[in-house]
Length: 320
Image 1: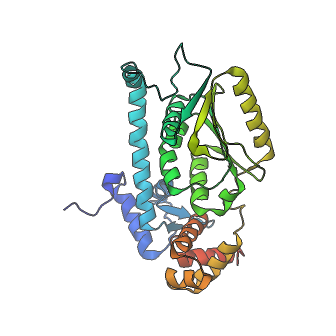
Image 2 (image 1 turned 180 degrees about the vertical axis):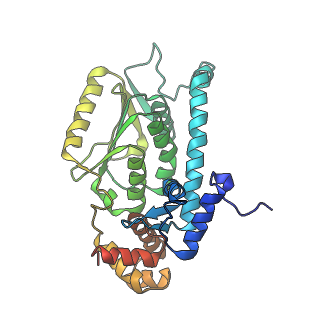
Image 3 (image 1 turned 120 degrees about the vertical axis):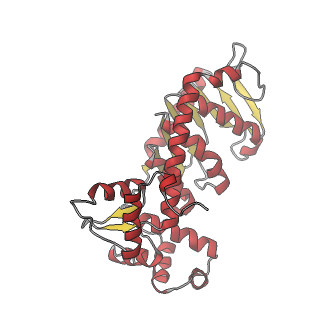
């Protein structure tokens, strides 16, 4: 059996030793003579947070290991993508076959293509974003992303951002009230995406490199399919509409700028006294799953390592 160590995730023995000490003590002030570089590394890896006094607090083990895994996966994926791009394997494979359902550009491609069915639409989105090089513009008129949608979008979005593509995303206002969606948007923002929240109606669209635009066949029923246009005049019109909506929207609130919602305030009050999630959810009249989603979101915003600490930090901020 493998020794219970974090070395396989790129953590040195000194870094792991300090992290384990943090977990035992709850917090500590690094020794400037010996621990400063190690402490900075723990913060950079997402294993610890630093208070305004310079003290370190440990991130919960589950979350810390999750972040370490993400770091390693991103590093390996970036290396593989760079190698893939350098050797031209994708272009080589694409020459082997023609895929009628996908929006590949050929000399005979029409300026406007109709794509039927969500499976083909998703394949079209994947191919468009794979080849985007400068800018990717998207809107979401609903504002709430399902876990399945986030799972589908995450590798595409992160891959695009890692290539240095400018990503601008417009989300409808309900995004601010959904913990899962909000956490994902903050994740993208942390990777360099520009995200704004609109309190006005949005039209659904995806625009790549200002050269191709994807819009729904039926805005009321996106499952019917989409229209892909590369006709310059139509693309310019869609871009103009996007820019108009972008100007009217507001930047995604920063963690420190966004006050808790009414349900979050109620959860924090219960969190301060309740011992179990089940009793807290029952007191608020919500499901345990919903309760836990809000708690996880609050812990992230407050950089808290446990529920009780989150309640204390929230109280210090005057959130309840």
